[in-house]
Length: 469
Image (cartoon, rainbow, N blue to C red):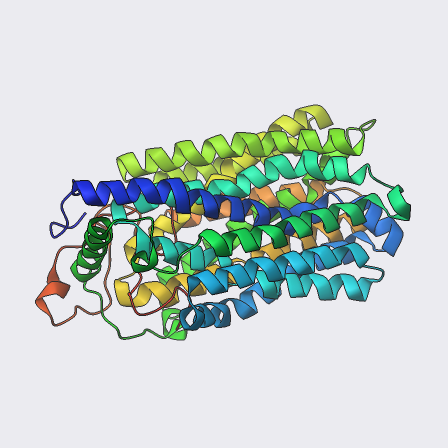
């Protein structure tokens, strides 16, 4: 942390932070659970949906992946609109609209409708992740953003744990009132997100000044600390073109590494239910229970790796180790029995899932304040296209070979190459920040702030959102 901001905060600031962790952070955690559930529950409906609609494995994979095309295209406009309407209104809009589209998935009756709704789901969700990360940057000091972001990101892991049993149970409603189990699953889980969206609107505040549950002293102290940190980082209002950033070899490395992480993570996410089902003799509910095991292990790994990363401040070795662990897990799953393969996929989930929050600390330490917003938006939007490639490629491989083993081998290669690429990256230590051009003001010459923990927006300029370029 910069010398301009004391390591030990005042009692008012500490009290405000405690309140934020009790009220705001849990709210975003639950939102991310619902977000991730509506995004990945498709994997559990795969067999029934494909049979009823007449989808091949390749068509299913394409539909699963087209979500990420829309997400990448609309992420920047979404975050620009958040600046205009405020976090409270815009995050509520995101949640309710994705819930409506997720509910509409219950009425899919053709491949074209399947593709259209998956695309619309990406449009609806676009901007959610960077908006939350930016929200943390305006509410919490550097010293606590890492912990808050780790808790928030654990929401996706929690979703993958609970979505299995819940989706499995809903799939067993097949035939109730003449509807298939997959229709009930999409409808009920989508409606839950819509209802939660109205709850979010009731409890969420756009800015610290609007929080009636903070005292005047707590508001003033929190605003002062965050403003001082922004000043110490040499914050400037000039915007950096995202396309100019593409000329930076380090940014290109960030793009590739995050793309690879998403390829591995979403391939495991979408196809894990199918792989577990290969065990044979399992009901839909039992498949759901077993698919939750790898993600339960991943939740623990996310929390532990985040704490260790915060404590030692060495991000790259941890990220390399996680990617190698994930690659070894997918490789082992190819050569062992289905039951042992489930254990191997636990290792894969424990490697690939924590890799994402650890990765985000490295671009933050490399980019200066003026380049952070467009740079992070660029890496996030293009890197998320790995979510398109993963299920699409897996579907083609299964249609061609009749097995997912080729895809698992491919994930091993991707994981190992990404681990090697991390060794070429600058950033990821407490003193690794590289700035574009120093600002002229004395404040801009202050020492860089110490690195926050997993999160994608610790160096955001106060006047712009995480995806404006």
